[in-house]
Amino acid sequence: MSTATLPALTKKDFQTDQEIRWCPGCGDYAILSAVQSVFPELGIPREKFVVISGIGCSSRFPYYMNTFGFHTIHGRAPAVATGLKVSRPDLEVWVVTGDGDSLSIGGNHTIHMLRRNVGLKVLMFNNRIYGLTKGQYSPTSEMGKKTKSSPFGASDRPFNPIALAIGAEATFVARSVDVFQPHLKATLKTAAAHQGSAYIEILQNCNIFNDGAWDTITERDARSEHIVQLEHGKPLIFGKNRDKGIRLNGLKLEVVQLGNGIGEKDLLVHDEHNSDPVYPFLLAHMEQNDGFPTPIGVFRSIEVPRYEDLINSQLREVQAKRGPGNLENLLRAGDTWEVRA
Image 1 (tube, rainbow, N blue to C red):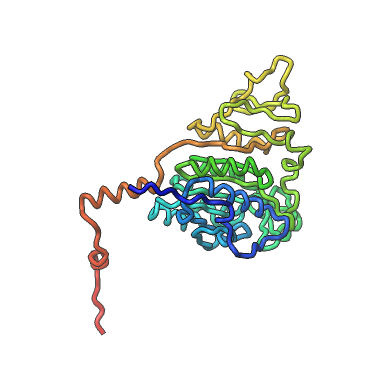
Image 2 (cartoon, rainbow, N blue to C red):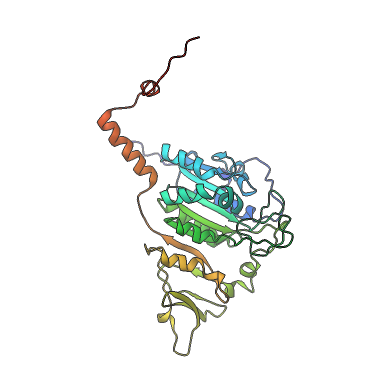
């Protein structure tokens, strides 16, 4: 038996010689750096990684990752990745997409991949704009957003990506921010360890077409008042002085000031393993209400059978009963016609 160990990988091993063609200052650089830093720490051979993308600025990702990869077509990355994962469940398949690519033309592929619990890791870059096509409003742009395609303000109600993922019964749902590097790397590692579909929304800045989209949570002086970090088993506390919290009042969440008889024991304790989707769904809608912070971290992490395992188990059972299939016989089965000249 061989006792050889795998050579240690570094961030450099996952970098390519391709010129990175994102605008200077784009948040995509920070996400790329985080992914290239985390992959070597996962203990997986480099040839086992595959990065699959759709269309958009984020979807250039496979060119900059020294792994196997596939730059697919608009919105179809989850479908292509599902096919690969089912046929090669031993591979570590990551999907890189954006708010336009995955929530507009690719919306159906996204929700069906999540409901099936395919063992993919999905990085959804959310900059609230179509960046590659130069600044049209996207499915996550806020109501009233003035853009090149909505000069008088967008009339659409935006998608809430986290709520969408939870509604599709995703088994792992998380959120991080491009410039929060330690938090982003920790979230990526946690997602990598999950066995089913792992969906990570990454709030990302487009400094050319939607600069400052997330200023209220990224500015150093503001972030403590506008962010609550979700940590399993810990109460939901936030604020510069950690003097505010979230508690459950009936079926509604409310912000409370700590003190005057209200303590940590009165607050909601985060449970990411809660199998009931109602709880993370409430968290997902928190920032849409005035006075509530934006949650970051893992909203939900539960274990259910993976789609690829169920499919391959079914195939083995059928083959055990009927024997291996024969393509020639299959093509000639059923109604066939012979065409003569």
